[in-house]
Picture 1: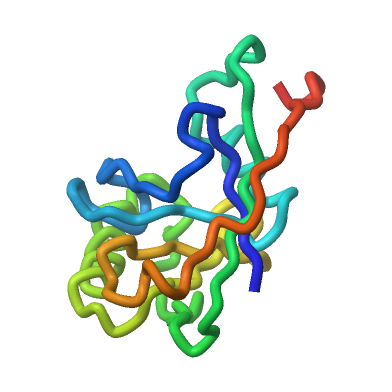
Picture 2: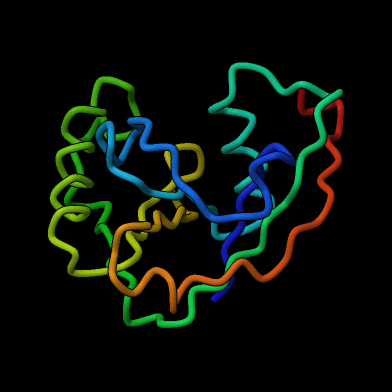
Length: 149
């Protein structure tokens, strides 16, 4: 299975997580957020970056998840009604933190807050199978369409 990530060029040639807190993880939990499609990854990047610097080169990473059995899926029906809101971050971080600490799966499949019928895939870089089951398949130039910005 392939998933996608858009990032600045200086971060594009290795799979490393910052440990910054986000919707599905707490601070110092090292995960990589990826999208199930190039287009969803584009929308997510626009939504979560305070600004896109067009003078800084961006890359599109294609990442292969080798073992599909290593993916655990969040059922959207089990999420709070306001799960797409920033107000739900604490509860969603708890869900993600339990997953991260359990080490039961390498990848967590979650609905996108932007398009709930599409999915993001969160990769736990500290999971023991990360080095053998997550492969950086391709890095290519990503050119922003100015109409998105």
